[in-house]
Image 1 (cartoon, rainbow, N blue to C red):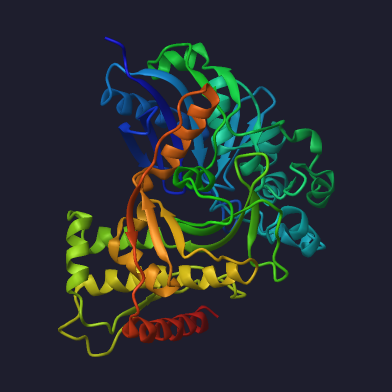
Image 2 (cartoon, rainbow, N blue to C red):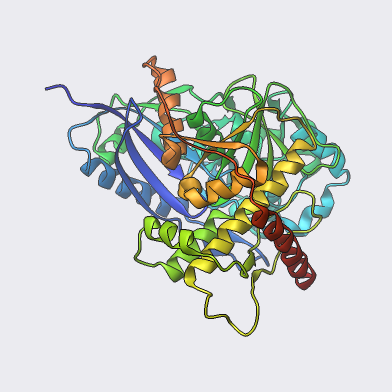
Length: 482
């Protein structure tokens, strides 16, 4: 009997590590996940790091667990995807020195070294902040001399995973877009940007396209994973881009990727920037496409945390049922999401409801308010996106675990007055995106996705009123944030 052909897709997100075993048709055969362990770095006011060597052992452990639920598969290839802006520094002997997640801001103190931020925006497609890799590296140089003296190069987290698998040092283009050292329009590293951050261009790895085969897995890693030595290692890409691939959008389509954060993306064939510098422009995983983005920031994480508090053991179906029963809409939330048009991020948030506490207020009221906050934030950022480019279609694609809520999808459809469409692969979108990439690299037949559900927009006067209430609540918390 022929073993089922499969891929291993390794996904390092902001909050967790996932390893999935998926068939060439996109079916998830096994999946294992754990939290990503970040640690506070006391050398800086706002710094986090992870131990890449511990992460690698975690990945091996999860791979074995995922494979144990899919016995007998033939692993043809492995690929990786990861959070954007996260990096791993490599030493002169190829060792993994330190991992810096996207939420690390060790470079904030050196932000002033960027004399002309508008010029950097024009080259990189994003307003430069300590979120991005270049300033993380600057922070290490200035305050971690024991690491800096061993430093040779750096990789995105997904490229580092592929380096560990294959031994090949490389940097994929969609990930390079997040470094502030890459000219997005020209599709190449920039000596001009390196000069801004006083980083030697010699430390930059070679650039590779997503879908590039790097060779076969290293024998020692094949043994650790328990797979054949002829399994190929394929270049993946940034998690947002791989999630987009799974929806199979057309050029000029808009995609909402609802995970820990919520990027609202338009696929374009040209390099577009925003005169007000609110949006990001990045490379997609192919040679010719770009993604124009407004990001609603931390959204899905809020929903997950509220579920842990109010529904710790219940399934999401229980939440949806109770949400349908909510009829008392006095509770409004503002929980730290981002709005592109605002000059400062929201650093204080919470719920506002009438006092004294009404007997009609339930746990469902708080989750309803959380989903409403997410939908309103998406709506505001969609408006910002439309201020930069047009969107004529009467639909929007959605993917990611956050849009498993039918209530949230209806909120979004009503606020945007667009159909919200999800495909059958929407829950594991970045993993399925990895399958697309591996299939293309190996010449396998492409997945045949199908539309799972369309949410039709409704006219809802109560939602119009609650939208205005949300804006007032957000303004109150902006004042508190100072």
